[in-house]
Length: 193
Image (cartoon, rainbow, N blue to C red; front, side, top):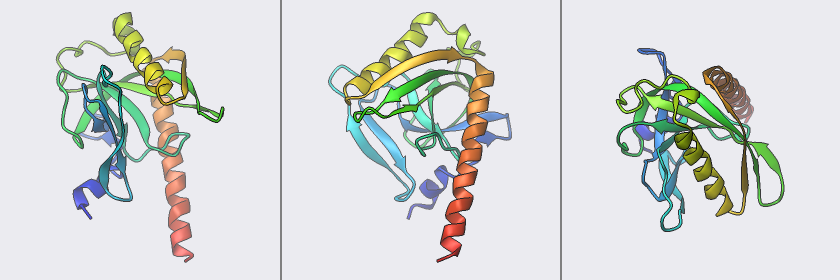
């Protein structure tokens, strides 16, 4: 097992050196191939290939040691000047969240918010401190991407709100607690074997 990769999902979600979040990049900006980190295999696996003409508008990854409603780590779209390699840890500052309801093929609905962050190393978006600082066209492009991405998979992604950093921080804290709770349950189950 690749020790470096096996630790990616267990990194601290907060970079204590600069109080930013740590984001592990799964899919770089401009990529058509959607990758996801598989904790059991300690590797990045191909999930799907997007149609011709469609690609990720910014780097996409996850916040380690968190869990969303779906059980996966919290998703993050990271704004930065250049795409970075898969598996790179990018210290980033939260600027907000696009809150959304996702309807699965079977009609089941779940919240599937998209946290938005800016890389600390980014120059292009260096002045952006909150989601409202982004040009509306950029935020609309992000929303359109997720709507189209889900449509081509037979799902529906419906943005319900554009919220600021405080809401993103609350979602992060909920994700940390959710992951901690699941981690304790899993450890108890393993001890009882």
